[in-house]
Length: 321
Image (cartoon, rainbow, N blue to C red; front, side, top):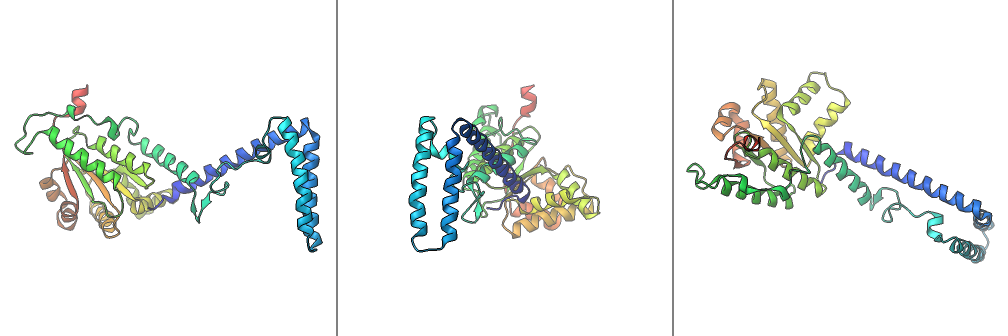
């Protein structure tokens, strides 16, 4: 599982901001308690002074004797706090995250408290392009599709979408480097974006990095960087496209297919295939149309190394109007 470095950096920053706010709140509460009971502050100073004195002595048994004195001072402090209805741990300040003690790291890796913020940031970013709340597997309704037999499918559009649903649910649950690459092919309004959103949300919830964007916008970023019109953010976005766990390319086939665009698409798709980084491609093109448009190695990879899922039926957007 690879994290998006841009989002992970923001997640760490948010975690540290929360820690600072938590520590500031603890300090304010401690100050208010010391104003009520000045003896608490005196005991703080005495505990600290006794510990430092033992360190300076460097004599046998000095630290043991200091621990006995400190324990007695702490017991007095705890008694005062009990009278105030406050636990000693709340006065001293409990860490916001008990696992990493607010360092943000656990066993030399980001702690779960950081991963939680990371997943939230990624979901927010995906939600700016996809309706993750309204488009998830729980919202799937096969009744929107016709149950009439379609000779081209060998069944009905409803049976076809139910099969696609099962494949996508299993893809999301078992997602990893060995996952298949998927192509969603079909006319506009047949549910491709809905199912892409379902997959993106489910894979994101499992902590994998997901990048979703149209083919047009992804190619625009690559072109800007290639011809020197990009900036640091553009370079970061390209790295995310190359290295994310799941890349979703929407609306393949509507981009202006210049020689550069063809080469750039080939580079991204071929590199990710070699590095075993799964992709989901959505297109309005049928397989013969795609073969004619892209030709050569690019068409060969899209047709031969992706599982094609054909979306059929009426335009659902028109039916909902």
